[in-house]
Image: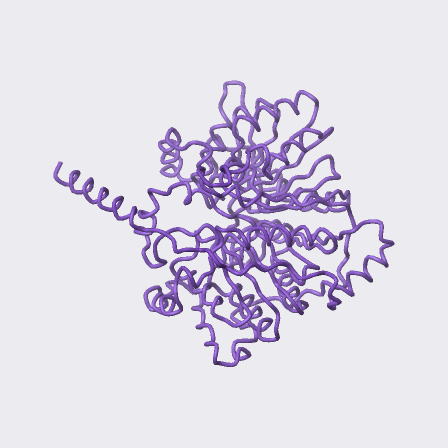
Length: 533
């Protein structure tokens, strides 16, 4: 009883202190916008010629980036080709080897006069990853944090405690992923920036997919970036912490793994060129020859949540945007027009009641729905698996075919669909939808309630049978070689059918997952609503 009372008083004290924590004044920031495409940059001249050579039938073109090496190489190429501006918007940038290569390339671009704007969600900016914020102090690089949390970067659990009185802010994150050069070329996809997304992690890598775009659609991407960059929730890094604080964090948070520590940003009086030149800390691919890639010209549209989706409920704007006006809701509406088949690839698949109703209606119309998601063993977010598992039987009754990716992958499967590297384990991270073999959606959005209700997302919608076929060809080996197919037996129990070419036996429990993990999630399930997973 004494210990219990002690914890109660400690918790009360933390809540009181939370009321004293707050964010600095964010007024008076200078607004900035994407480069005018009328400026004749080398990329602009290339775009004009490429469009002329294509016959000008479509205003935008795309390249499927379907490997981990290609993902890093394409981003290095955009940095290399940019002459005026680079705009990056990400949920997370991790301080590790591959990101070090990217960010040092960004410093080199800034040294040659390129304006660099980096917009980063605040949630993953503590500990070793806080060192990425050193870029904010490099000349020609601006860095802002979206929807920042109160409290310093070295506070750990304390930082989380001071946000208890502002839980809504903690829950609503900017999950967008954009990488744009000169307002002419850009990348959209599911990847954050870090070793695990580029096939460089030692233990486990993410299987993911991006699309490289050029043409008119990139202007829409830049418009979305500018809306977030100039939004009141975007705070310049310098208003949240100083260079001295970052240097102090460097001594507090020493890397505990093989991740290299980030060098300090050069002081303004130092020649910026001293920081140029990517570091060769491992196997990193050279920049992709994007100008001679096989571009696919096709109609397209940008799906982008408004920044107001992350505003407080009592904001002067009248509250968040309607849940009927989100990227995920738009995708579900589009799926409703499918005539034959919908393929969904979503690492975190929490359908919720509305999606379940829509899937049942699609099944009644004869539309086949196939879902590839993570198994419990392969997911990096076991809690999210709760929201999927509780709806699994209803999904199967609605005719949805469920495929759950294994954690241990054959090399052939890992390389064919965006992974790479030597790690034997892999976790699905791609976010894809293919409708009737002709419409493709690629972006940051999961088909879950968090993406629908809590986070902001961005994605590309492309009408191209060629791209759709390419994605199908990359998904099929995963299902054939490396995914369990879930069946509902007559007695209501589940059967996990082993991949046909795996040589494994069928399972009646969550495959490859430990018994303690399975039991822990069962205990958590009653207390974990779909919208928080």
